[in-house]
Image (cartoon, rainbow, N blue to C red):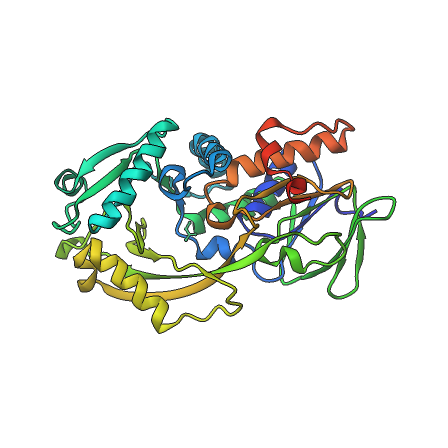
Length: 377
Ligand code: GLY
């Protein structure tokens, strides 16, 4: 048995750190292993939208419900995290606009609105003029918008840094630059083999390695998660020149997320089957074109940077949450576009499920049931 830990977490992104923090707060001894720097993968590359109404699509009813459940927990999760870490995480409740930029996209938006209202999403239909009253930099040619006042955002980079601080403060160990080669699910207790050959035993293992989950050996079948490349870029807001946005704006081809540090994040491409994380001229071009079509003043903004990462996606684009076929090996991966939104519900519910397992009470929380790792069997 690893003398340092009863739970070993593979992956130090927002999900792994969140689960580790919650376990450590409940008195569990936890070690997290990240192949690089904790929080610098998909969690860092994200935009920080907390947007179940704007981001989750038709027919994803279980995912929409999970997203709304997690959003309802975000404000108190952020407050608890700020207290535990001593760091601010920039929770903002300014709301989100989903806009159409032509007649076809207005028709698609109308269908989305009908679906959302049928499922009691808290949204309003706006004309282009009404949307421009909320966000004056919107193009005057936009035909329509959906206003999602309860779709919020957070400073996701501050969140992962705060989670590492809070997890460590609660007694967890966060080990960086230490890749995990294998999960060992078949011994008397589950364990890990690190890439340097070190073998560790524990009472439970959590696979939270995002897009790299399928590459961790030892599980049968391996985690059914693939990477979907996303490129994004940042420009500089400049309120003195009138270049300012207050709300998240989501258009047909790009979303714009104003951050508290003065950057405007514009994302995100969705490139399935692309293994590299190069930023490309085509990716940046499509994002800027999509952004300018809804906020023309983007053309005037100063360039800051571009980046790319892989989102972890299961076949149905919903996360894998809960115990795997191997007793004591838990999944918390496959969060695709929603890792930041789903962080509180994942951290709290997966940690609670592991706690029940460690205490010999193997029930599954109803909120996790639709996301069982067995659902593809
Ligand atoms: N949630 C933003 C993205 O995946 O691009």
